[in-house]
Image (cartoon, rainbow, N blue to C red; front, side, top):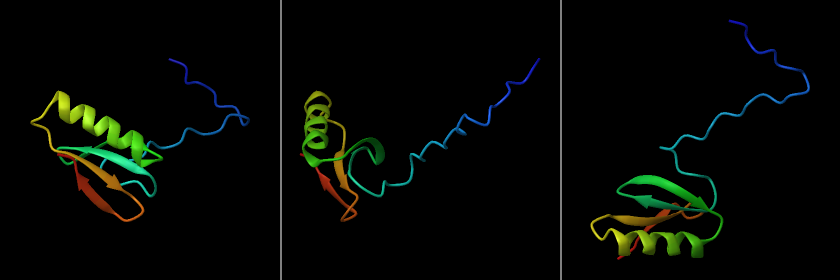
Length: 75
């Protein structure tokens, strides 16, 4: 089996961010203590969180603010 040849012009693949580390900026939807989706602004994060909460009321949905490192529980 031949290995693919990496050209000098091609950039090396980046490492994927770890799912268990909070982001440095933006807002993240946290479902049952797990970081899920990252957004640049608060409004789309809250909209997705409220949609999840209305569809699945048993979930614990929070919005994590990376600037203040605070979580807000959606009810």
